[in-house]
Each structure stands twice: as C-alpha cells, then as structure tokens.
Image 1 (cartoon, rainbow, N blue to C red):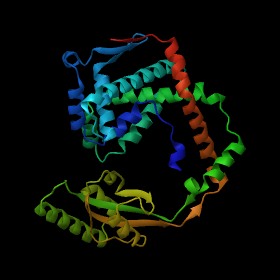
Image 2: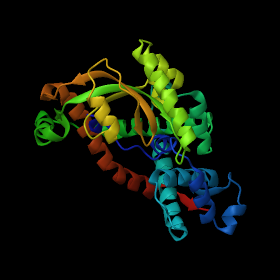
Image 3: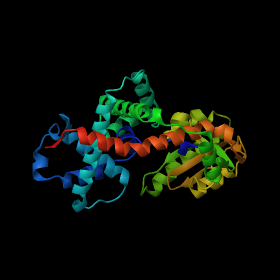
Image 4: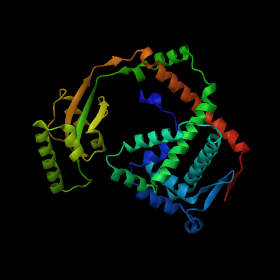
Length: 335
C-alpha cells in the first residue's frame, strides 16, 4: 500500500533526500563543465532569477543540478546541460512561487512537522557520520536541510488547505478503485521478513579482501548461531544502513531481492540463521524473522488509505493550474 501514500513533492526535500544516498563527484564534474565563463566567475550567492523580488542563487541552482544529475544515474552530454539547467531553474521558480503562496496560509505545529520529517529522513542512515557525509555530498548544511524541509512541508500543507478542502472522495469512487486495482495493490502474495548482517565489499575488491570479508562474516554467523543477539551483532558489524534497525530489512516478496539472497532467505524457517551468502554486495548472514501467508486486504481495511491516495492524486493534478495562476501574477526576472 505504500504506493497509495505518496504525493509528488515540490522539488525540495524529496528531491534532495533522494540523492543523499548517492555520490556526487560525477555530477560535480558535469555541473562544472556546463557552466559558461561568466557563470564560472559568478559568486554562489549571486542571483540567477528573482521571483517577486526573492532571489534564487547560483548555489541553489548548482546544488539542484547536482542532485538531479546524481538521481538520474544517466550520462548527460554537455550539449544537453543547458536544457537540463533551464528545467531545474523552472522547478526552483515554481517551488518558490508555491512557497510564497504557502506563507500566506496560517499553519499550526509547522515546527513539529518539520522536526518529525527530518527525523524520519535521518533514520535512513546508519550513523550521524554517514548522514553528515551525505549532506556534504550535495553541499548542504543541517540548517539548509531544515529550511528545505520547512519549505516542503509548508507547500504540502498549503496545497492540502487551498486545493484539498474542496475535494471530496465518495464511497463509490473509492470502492471502484479498490475493485479495479485489487490484484495490483491488495492481493498480497506470500512474503517474508528478514534481518541480515552485511560485510560489504568494494567493487573490484582483491581476493585477499574477499577472504577477509568472508572470514569475518563466518565468525559473525557462528556467534549468531551460538545464541548472541542478532540485532546487536548487526549494529556492531554490518556495513548496511539497516544496521540502525538491527539489520531489519522489513517485509519482501519473491523477486524483490537478488537471487542468491532470496533463495537463502526463503529456504529458512522463522528464527533460523543462514550460512554465509555471497552476493555482489558482499557477504551476508540472514535471519528469517517471519513468514507471512498470502491474503487479500478487505475494502474496509484499506478504504481510508484509498480515500487519502485519491485525494492527493486530485491535488497533484491541480498543481500545474495553480502554478500557472501564480506565474501570471508574479514578477519573474532572469538575471
């Protein structure tokens, strides 16, 4: 049902945090290559566009470009960079217009919402060091992340109030969605829940490094089999971000994991621990924590989520018209 909980965000926190897990060095190079001589000499604090007098700076544009390039995982030719940059600048402009509109709406508990959102995103990382490194990869400070998150939450609150309050989802509409999408969203196939300890390997690791990693995983497997707390072992030794949750990978079905990992996990009974399993990521020790029988979720069980999803989809469909309206009233100056 996670698909039914999403609404596209307005280029800010979702865009930024989606890229924090990836390295940004190639994106750095692409951004640098795409700069003109005049841009290269300009200060990061220089405005590239003003939206009702509010500047969007060279730093913001370059950072958003870097994030976009990192997320795309695709090679963009230097000749295509100018067009990509124009697209990112348009997104930033739209986002600024929406944020300015959001500032006209009274919002209660905004600080608490921002704090909760940042904490949720922080949980994606195994440690504070990893989180700080991810922020540094996109030239972002904690204070800037907080501001990005504040803007994102404020925009979504505004959209809910300005557009969402006019939207009603009837029971027939929700039931029709359920019937039309039962096999896609609501027929749950058999799944399992597992935790793992990963001793990761860098790409191109030497045979000696592989031997050391395998031996370390084997030693951890023996300790787990002997009865030591699996979650504590994962927190102590795993190189996967899931270590923060004791190695818990959550629930997954067949086809969700790489083949060798999947075969090993599905061969276990709840509570059992696997032998060391090798994948392209390194060496794993797996513990199966649950096996979940197939079931079909009943309409009454998911009605609330369906209504929420359909409402957000309707809000999202109206955002382009709102942006058009805001643009017509705005003073947008390219510098």
